[in-house]
Amino acid sequence: MNSEILPIFPLRSIVLPGGLFPLRIFERRYLDMVAKCIKDDKGFCIALVKKESSNNYITDVYEYGSHVKIADWNKLPDGLLGITVEGRCIVKILNSSLDKNGLLNGEINTLEFEKQYLVPQKYRSLSDFYRKISPGLKDFIAYKQEKYSDASWLSYRLTECLPIDLQTKADLIATNNSLERLEKINSLMQKLYNDEMKNR
Picture 1 (cartoon, rainbow, N blue to C red):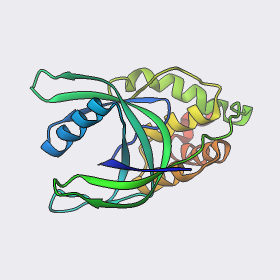
Picture 2 (spheres, rainbow, N blue to C red):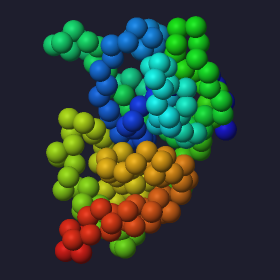
Picture 3 (cartoon, helix red, strand yellow):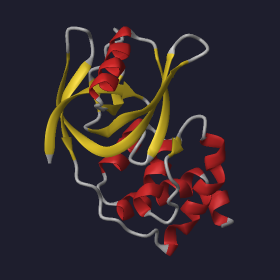
Picture 4 (cartoon, rainbow, N blue to C red):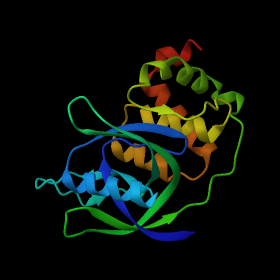
């Protein structure tokens, strides 16, 4: 595993490998971070917020996150900076701390890519479900290339968009086997969308 120091963007949403995620940037620390990432052609890490902070400086994030690179950027009509980031790989955050500008930085280990599997027949209903809902998500989160038969791709897309608590989402991200992740998602889907899943 490769280790490096990267800025961490704490969020209540996540983009995972193969996903595209629009962000509106307005705080000075993140504007500076984005400018440096574009200049140096480097990425940063998005991590789910573990505990909110009353002083706006979040330091408590979940251990596993996503390394992203800026795929596009532009000035939005409201004057803010808009960027689109692409999820590249899963990372483990070994430790983190705020710098003098209030930006969270951490020692990051990049994990190896998961073993690739085709989506088993048992989980084809999950693929059908995501195919059905994805057009309505495109303004919130999208993907670079559709791979509905790829177990990692499908489980990442569902992890991004399912309305589940952050701890459960973090557990899915930390699961390093796509078939295990699909099984967990399948169980969640039976609870969230029981009637719809029964009809498939």
